[in-house]
Image (cartoon, rainbow, N blue to C red):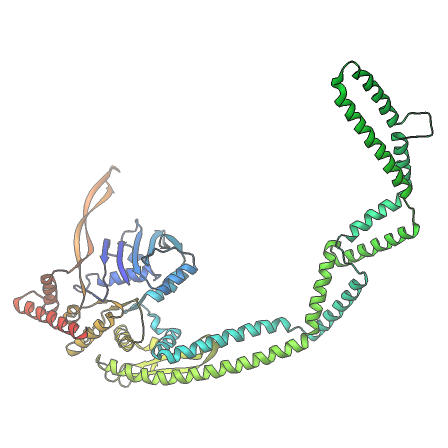
Amino acid sequence: MLSLLQIKNFALIDNLTVTFGSGLNVLTGETGAGKSIVLDAIDIVLGGRINQRLIRNKTQNVFIKATFQVNSEVLKLLQTHKIDYPKNKQVIFSREISLSGKAIRSRFRINGASANLQLIKKLRNLLIEITAQDRTSQLTESARQRELLDVYGHNCIAQKKESVKFGYEKVQALEKNLNKYKISQTEYSNRLALLKDQSKELEEIKLSDKDELNSLQKEYERLSHSVELENFSHQIFELLYQNDNEISAVVDYLSTIETLFIKMMEYDESVEPLLEMLRSASTQVIEIGQEINKYGYSLDTDPQRLRELENRIHLIKQFCRKYNINSVDLIDYHRQVILELNDLEDYDSSLENLEKELAISKKQLLDNCHKLTTLRQKTAEKLEKKLIEELKSLSMEKVVFTCKISPSSIGSHGGDKVDFYFSPNEGEKIQLLSCTASGGEMSRFFLALKACFVKAEESTGSLIFDEIDTGVSGRIVQVIAEKLYDLSTNYQVLCVTHQPLVAAMAISHFHVKKQVIQEEVIIKNQDNAMLKILEPRTVVKIKQLNNINDRKEELAKLAGGNSSEDAMEFAESLLTQADLYRLRKE
């Protein structure tokens, strides 16, 4: 529901704020007063096209802001696009428009966040429907007509649509899965042979430890340098512990040092801790000498083992180069080969099973689509009958309406294309609604259609009618007024009208008028000095008629062109008649 509209520098509007209510909102005023400009602003803030003539002052920006109370479907779409909204479900749309040379620049925002036109139009379809002479309602779109037909079919169509949607999504998933298996026979055979060869040769090297290559290389280094290692260990043993030469070893020097410490203690016992440290070091040196001696004797120069290591290392490195992978990942690659090989070996049976399942699912989908088509055809017959009744009551006695259902590519909505065909006058060829109906006829068609849906649809959206009552009078106007009110019990309705019968039925009544004001402008004089002057300018003003006398006066003007006593009495009778109708509907 549109609750607040703010407009600045748009057409004849300089600065305007309008608060709309729920139910039936009516805008009245003299012809050319600017009533349709308000509807233009609503259209444009929600993505409608703009041209230069609508920019009031070429040097200033147009700014339009519309505040809506929205339903959960709108909030879900906002959440999908990560746009925040308050807990009161209030969403603010704004559009700023400026001229840059001859180019028009525009920026949309939703709750202060930048938004693109695509999102704005998606939200627009959930918020408003406009019928007017120069605007195209989404009512003329085939997809919307199919949606309306389905809503009119209530739960029986809704349940079948769910089955179709589920079946369609299942078929899509199966086809996607099947495409993974649809390899050409040559590719399949080649891949299978390659994987078998790889699996066989990777199995033959019996690689089970990811660190094997590193361990082998360390062992190879040790064996290939065993002679050097033995010589080094012997030298270390001689230097630390004992040797065949007359040169003292490290333990000999430590023994001599120990003797000196003992002599020092005869004079100073404080060096005793140092003596203990020396004795500990001596013990460690003796142990090192003994261990390095054992190490030297344990070294083995095994030529056969060395050759085995060389061959094994060469084999692993060869496979690493072949598969362009390091030895650590070679085992994982082997596992992947085995898994893919198993999948391919099961290829034939998996493919056959998938094809069978897909065939069954497609048949089920087609069956459900046929059943949905049948339900739609039955519903279309009911809608045609009901809608023609509603249109005839709106002074379209010779109207012809057909809801045509034709085959279409199957989707989540089924396999039907729905088109509304319409002929408003006797002798006129029946054509698509979008090609046939004039603006006034479209408005009445839309009103009649929505009258069929008052109990079928649940909506918090807004319906906007621009001069729906053009060219009709008397009893038909009363019917239009009553239908507009009936719609307003389920929707917010905004209506521009010249008919007092329609205006009397309003819950909220707004008077639109033009007013000349003196606007301050800055000009240059002959000396190029800046001067402020006042210039007359026409602006549009809107006043909500809350006072009963103001409403009577406005209805009197609509009825007789003046507020004479007779016209005022007539206006009062219209308001009384409207009150009685509303009471009967409660």
